[in-house]
Length: 178
Image (cartoon, rainbow, N blue to C red; front, top):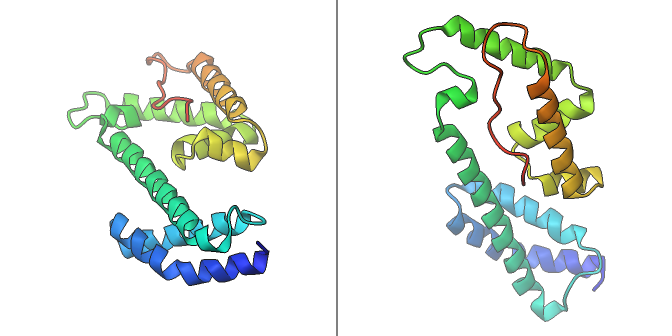
């Protein structure tokens, strides 16, 4: 299938795919974002995977996967937000030593600032932007295992850094897995 045919078929299918995504997501903005992600994924597939008759079905399968990925990411965000405030580096509501927590956070910032820009970028992508190792690996043109290994090494180096105060070492939330 030519690229032009693929674009025309996608445009013809996009309205029904948007409606499908609206029913699967919590709001119209999310559905529109997912429809754009779907279009990028479909158009990136050079030459097409199937013939004209099966294209709409294939696109719906890709749409279902895009929605499932968004739901899993949303669940990961909720779990992290519902976890203890202490895990986020925030003092609990009944904090006895707020200055200690501030010092721990400052130490963590100093340790992260001591990393090279690639390391800081990798930690940002994984833990703040919540990208999976596979997503980071695809963008960086390396294997997902290489990304997980690099994250694990960065976390070990941050944990092993000499603490500047008498406080307990800084702990990190999350894992280096996908």
